[in-house]
Length: 497
Image 1 (cartoon, one colour):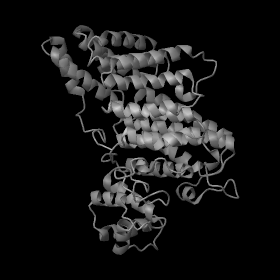
Image 2 (cartoon, helix red, strand yellow):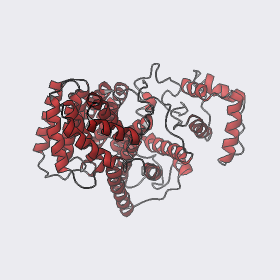
Image 3 (cartoon, one colour):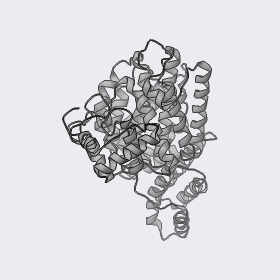
Image 4 (tube, helix red, strand yellow):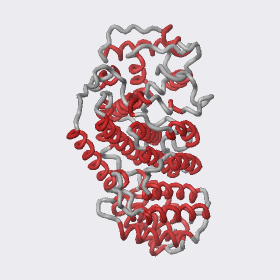
């Protein structure tokens, strides 16, 4: 008991709208349904949890997390409720603990537990048809401040799992959620293959259709990590967890579950660092930065990119550094910083060209090829063209090059290229060409589950208004209006930290 109010629990309790008596009765019913009929919670105990920071014993924190998750329609973990026995659990995130938003960074031996709990709650929301709205995105500055020292220290693989006499025994938290068994290299190879299958599906069709499968696979990997495996297997298992968490985050971002996506990116960074892969941790943070730019928060993106660049380590390949620079350039373009953007893209081009490919790129970097380099340059120049219209011509050149280089199976990226090209043409006062590429995007966008493609299409649609007197453009606008889903408030997009 801390003696201080648990403001995290108090805030969520207020959002839920229960009385203390109601919550006590629901805890007892939910605990019985989860196999703990002996639990007897009352109003006075709930009051102590909230007012004095008392942390109840297991399984009560998990029961409360399940109740709040269902009530609020978004993932709520025991960390969110301030019910974890480490650090300062009762501290309000926005009142004196900005350096540790959402318990970041958590203790090394908590990563597998946090991963398993969060994915379990996410799956529960999937089953019940709820969505991850109502939470706020943490600011990039808060996340980067919290994670700076943690990311720059050497990872300690010895902390991957609790140290026990029996190296293959699961820890209690993991055993309660998932009946895992020791795995070997054959199982690891199967998991790595599944990651590649999910990654290719995402690149082709977007994140909406396979998100639940990825989250479920990640949940199982979290259970496997509760065992002490031989170091070589444990390291690769952390790599699988990082890759799946990035995919879960990217797919969540792709369908507009923004706070959920951010949490997965942070989990991915933790998992990568636990496995000793600092470049992978930085790439996970760069995904969070791309999310911030997409949501109109480029200053937060630059904070995250500064951390990603500085924490990536000396072993980071030139192509990976080039990718990081393209995201930084997009953020700069969003802020109208043309000179800085051009300088940053110059660094990206130099690094990409200097990659001799003598060292095979990791699997997660194989998606970033020359087509993606030009696609990101097209996006950056098209974004800058909102501030400097002359940049639209350069955007067109890169978009055309990206389209010429795109490989089969990268359908979503091709849609983005078409939209970048069409948008640049509208800004460059070339509605004829713009109409051609806009219709190419429109012809394939319906077969993709990515909400981000619709967000970009809306941005392009805004540019068509100045040509509304042209018959072709009037027809294009009508076509877009007929098929475009109604715009909804993006979860967490406009929220503050």
